[in-house]
Length: 225
Ligand code: PRT
Ligand code: ZN
Image (cartoon, rainbow, N blue to C red; front, top):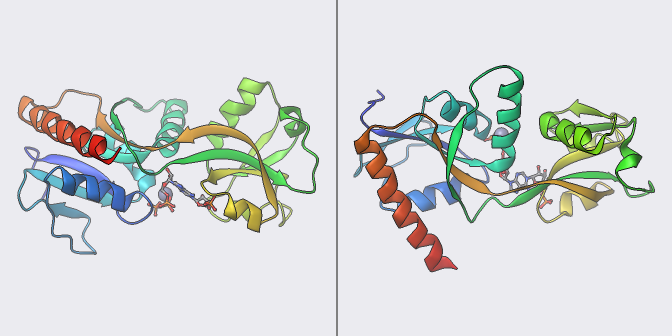
């Protein structure tokens, strides 16, 4: 059961943001005994419930006010915000803290044998991506007519498979691009994990609790610097 007096926090169930989010909660003193398969986990020492979901669902859960807080990558947050704006859905949230994990960039990459001449090279091209709204915003800003081909996985093989001329995907070390014969040409968005809060007011009790965790979080992050 979800109790509305308890603070609800959405975290990625498994993946690159999971450890960073759980470590931070632990560091501010919120304890859980996680059982693997459960969607909801109740803290054993604080009035906090965790909703463990795919990262793609977290922005919507916060923007719809289903949860109070969420840990999410700015890339996914911004993409979902643009998607929801286009669909006329609520897309508001507050950023409480930019965090020190989940760092990456969303970049356009093209086959290494192609000679890139600048953004105009993209004119009329097809670019495979999981982030069509961010990519289309970039095309618009640059005044380029190009198309975003939506792929939910295996984006990096799209050019070789003849599905697209290039890709727009997340990069951290660059090893995936290199292994697929691609070269990074434009960084269109820089991202880190963030802690966000629903846009409407929380009860005083919940907001005081959030503020207390934030103060502790800042202390933990400063100690790491
Ligand atoms: O199952 P679920 O939907 O929750 O997980 P997911 O597979 O969608 O996400 P996950 O766990 O892979 O990533 C979650 C978030 O981590 C992303 O939205 C980013 O905010 C952040 N992040 C940081 C990354 C990377 N670094 C990253 N390198 N997300 C993905 N990658 C992938 C990238 O897509 C590419 O396939 O790693 C590959 C490139 O890495 P390098 O090191 O080879 O450049
Ligand atoms: Zn995802």
